Length: 358
Ligand code: SF4
Image (cartoon, rainbow, N blue to C red; front, side, top):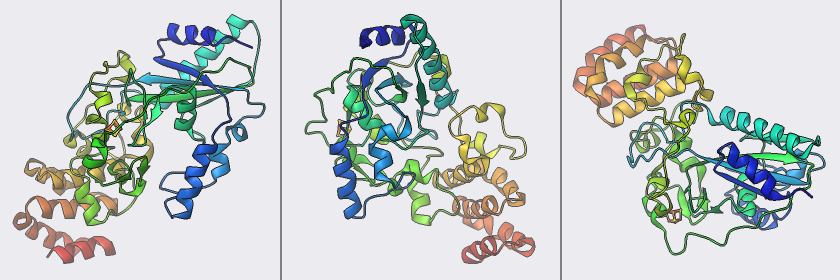
């Protein structure tokens, strides 16, 4: 049996903020919650795995699983601004890549230290097991009423990664902590997605809406407010995040870009720096669409002419939102532009939205 301190010392050499050890068992309590939600129609949710077995049985993802090393890295940028365009987790480097690199180095160091080879598999959001439940069992934090994992020292702005291994390592215990009587996040969720403590209805969450494909219904567009990607409201107001320290890692500094940046993206030649971030997986079309929505919601008159150029985009989705955005920002001014555009527009949906506006 490997001493857990050996693993944790290597983690701190690598400046990993949290390192705890657990195994793949003990997820019965979480399975019961999911089965109950399934009965009441609250499961499955957007972006989640339907198969409860896969979620609650980590050993299905790694043969011979004996231990799980849970790591977490602080990415807090200390911003208290509620209506930032991008969520705090949008850092200069995609955290999936950053954490995988760090964990690969960690494995090499463990092998060198114990002078023994072992099997392992690294995960960062790339397999459908209950990551937060494992982290809670390992004592990396507790699952809070906003459904996020909170660590008492680092709050909820932490990236999680796991190393599954056939190495027998001493295990940690769960923390004895919770939200207490607090319900601040439930009362302040702008999407009304936190419908009960620990219950996030993902399809109402603004973070989900910003990642949704295609046409977003009007009421949902309005809900998005100034959010181009993600939403941090339930974290910004959480008392556990009030006194946490800023991330010192240069790769995990906030990727601060505004509406104009996204409106100016050339879809044939998107900025290289954007490709390194976690927001590019939906592609630039969705980011431009979201920028058009936020420009309309925030009445950004200064971008009217820039948005007008989007009527020539070869994506009908972008033309659709450009039409809507122009009419929202300045209805009178948009009328003659839209009438003229209608004569040459070929797409049925875009034509219909113009007719509705006129
Ligand atoms: Fe828990 Fe309050 Fe933080 Fe919500 S705001 S996660 S209820 S401590």
